[in-house]
Each structure stands twice: as structure tokens, then as C-alpha cells.
Image (cartoon, rainbow, N blue to C red):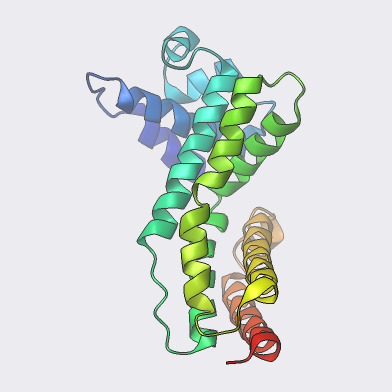
Amino acid sequence: MRDNMCAQKVSGSPETDDGSDTRQRVVEAAISCILERGFYRASSNAIAEQAGLTWGVIQYYFGTREALMLSVLEEASRRLSRTLGEAEITGPTLTERVEQFFDVLADYYGSPDYLAFIQVQLNLGHDPRTSERTRENLAELNERANPQLKRLMAKVVAGKGAGKRRQNLTNLLFHALRGVSISHVMLGTVPIYEHNLPGDFLAERRLLARAMSLLIEQELGG
């Protein structure tokens, strides 16, 4: 269903003078193609067909497939920065703040599009043919959202300890919550789980939030 929706989305919007609509149309087509076919089978021609354009037009805006894939990661970075930047942690208890943080992370890492983003990240990062300039851009994109992420994590554990122990626990909190979000979205691609587990996912998220809250209280105190 998502592929059909995405195909409709990328096929009809009018182009602005600066070409931004066309660029966005191609990026969305690339995301849809990667989700449908996988990174390597999302060829230049397949993406062009998904976007309803010729590869020549796409080359005009992006130059190479590598540059297009980097633009996919730039879109990922924009979404993550927007999600974190718009979020606030306001819960009066530690457990409520952890649950709020979990909801924020799940909004991005629990999205099906993240499965496309991580494929691009892994392949560009490990392909020896990736240019040095692209590698530098990847490193910059990976750091871009860190200030907002640290802002939110500091609010989650406000008033709880300090120093290296607190840093280790906030890092663990992030990795645990992110990992469960990714696990859930991956299970959602398996037909036998696709329509049966949303309630279980939410219950597991709440249980993990409580468990992490107890660990933080035990290790850091008030």
C-alpha cells in the first residue's frame, strides 16, 4: 500500500522554478524504490521510472546515483532533526519522561522509511567505491542531530546524577529505545506480524520504559 501511495505522491506535483519539487519527487521515489526492491536493485532506471522522469532529468539535478543516495540521507537527517527539534520532554516523573523520549524516537526510527535510510547508510559507508567527499558528508550528517538529541536526553534524566555514569546510562537509554523501535518496524515487514502486533509493540515499549527508569533510579538516584 505504501508503494502505491508513494507513487501517487511523487508523480504529480508541479515543479517550482528552482527545481526543489523535482528534487524532492526523485528523493521520495528513491526511498520507495529501495523499500520495494532493496538498495542494489533500486537502479537508476527503476528510480527514474518510479519518479515518472528520465534518468537524464535526474542526472541534471543530482549528477550520479551516489549523489542521489546522499540526498536520501540528507532527507533522513532533515526528518530526524525536525522530529527532535520539535519535541519536548515535560513529564513530571522519570518513567513518563522516558516514555515521552521513546515516543519521539519511535516516530523516526519506527518509520518504514528508516529501513531505506539505513540501507543507504550501510552501503555508502562500506562500499570502497564511495568517494571521499561523500564519506565526509556522511560523517557530517551523522553528527547533525546530536545537539538536539543531547538536549532531550538531558531533560529525561534531569536531576539524576552527573558525570561519566550518567553519560553511559543516557547512551544506553538511547540505544535500547532506538533498537526496539527498529526491531518493531522490521517485524512489521514480515507478513505474519504485519497486522497483528501493534498493541504488543506499545506494551513492550511501556515495559522497557519502566525497566530503564528503574535502572536509572538505581544507578543515579535523585
